[in-house]
Amino acid sequence: MTMPPKIKGLYHYSFPCRDGEETRRFYEDILGLPLVACMQADVVPSTGEMKPYAHFFFEMGNGSYIAFFDLGENQMPLASPNTPDWVMHFAVEVDSVDDVLAMRQRLKDHGVETTDIVDHHFIKSIYFFDPNGLRLEVTARVDEPGYLERVAREAQGELSRWSEKKRRMLAAKV
Image 1 (cartoon, rainbow, N blue to C red):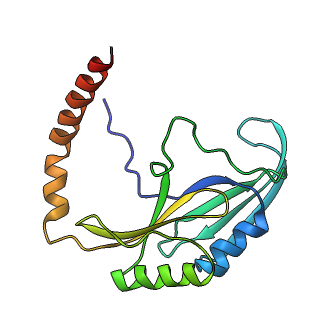
Image 2: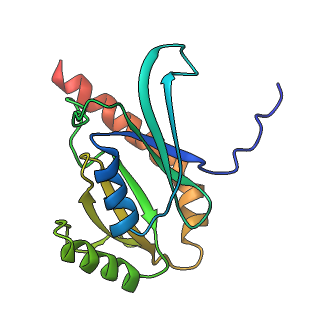
């Protein structure tokens, strides 16, 4: 069996939006991510489906993108009915905790509600929602040297322990 090609990183993450201009104002004017591409089409290339849309991309500092589809219907994207709203989110990284705090203040200045800073021990973050209901996290790393290597060594065992705990929780429901 051959090894899969190495995945270099995130190219883009796409999400639906209610209104392209509203989304552009939030991501470009408030968060500071430049709009670098917008394409319109009437046919979905991957399916052949007839569906007019605009697909646009905001560039992050590492060359990856967060992208949106405006389907021209002014409908708010629906949350997953079986998933708490804190689960599905998109995290972006800044250089320092001071930058997290500066972004929090900037968001507040623009009327965007955020959490207080959350200390995850290896990162410190704030959370908030964009105009489309997408939960975002702005975070900075604060991990001690060797932390990432240690948790990588422990990851398989932690997942096994979780799987066993989950099995017991599900069995208790029967």
